[in-house]
Length: 167
Image (cartoon, rainbow, N blue to C red; front, side, top):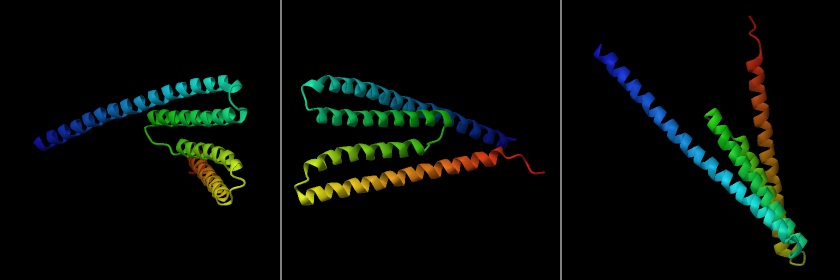
């Protein structure tokens, strides 16, 4: 009987520790979500201000900065989605992070491509920029393939779960 009470006490302590850690984990996730949301709002305001400067700066520069900022906003929003999904499902989902990787690569491709256009007469530097664009493009394909495989895997698991019992 004493051993059973000790087991019950141990289980109660484990449940209490689990509740405390879950609350702490949720607090951290909510803090991250708030910071990402505030960061997204600040970035949107910064992009509006960049558009206002369209008349005083070269159009190419402003559009590059605008595209760069918009892709950064997409990254923030996708990370916010990942945090929200983690809060809801209580597990870390890989797909939003793969999408963030694709967006980061595309952002870098845009920046490097514009810089490469200025390096046309500088052979080795231009070649380095082109290789960098190629590697980033390859990384986009790898990440997109990973997302495709994850979706196929999830679709297959959902399909298997939906099958009626064969009795």
